[in-house]
Length: 271
Image (cartoon, rainbow, N blue to C red; front, side, top):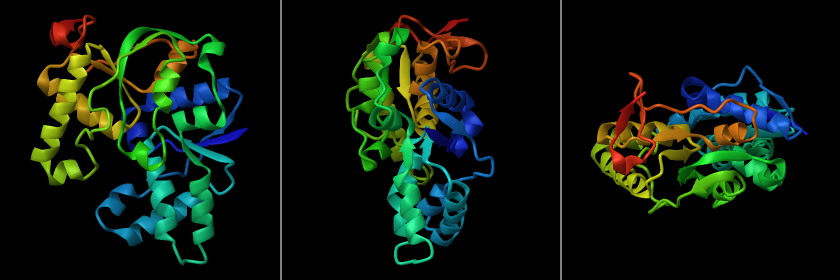
């Protein structure tokens, strides 16, 4: 099965390890993965700010770049939703591009969605093992593309991984792209509520699969003194299968790491 990686801007710039993990896992599962290097932004920031003509320019470029891909897989539900929900709408009635936009949307998948719904992965049968306790942040854009509990189901396939449900799981973290900049007070209140829910789980690790959400929540955790680490599920899967060395994500660049006893035990301990 041939798969093209759509890496997304934030993943490439801030979380490249997630992209590496996606490739390693897909190849381990028998996929032939390529990376079209000409890819750029999908156009979501422009679309969210009303610049639809500029969005169409980027969308045409993306459609052409991935024209010959059998499947397009991305570690971002947000960018997958942009392609699936809005590309067909952008080119509705445009006979030159409408069909191509629909075709591109139809072959684009969020990474965990692809594992569950296309590859039908069973990590338990592969001997996946990752010791630790983790909670999971369910990003809003996943609802738009029909993803519900796929990530939790995958987490439960990994031996040694104790999943702790997060209260108000369907509540937005307050990022919302430009929403956080346009309405900082509201956004800040929302993310502080999310941090409180995370702290209440007692889990030292938060699984977050959308880079924007991860940056927003991690930043608030730093400000609130909640000592938790953030990982994408792609990284945990790769580590659980022995495809990558286990690595902790530290919130503090000065060498402080999350307290292994969990958020309730104090914010940080010295590395």
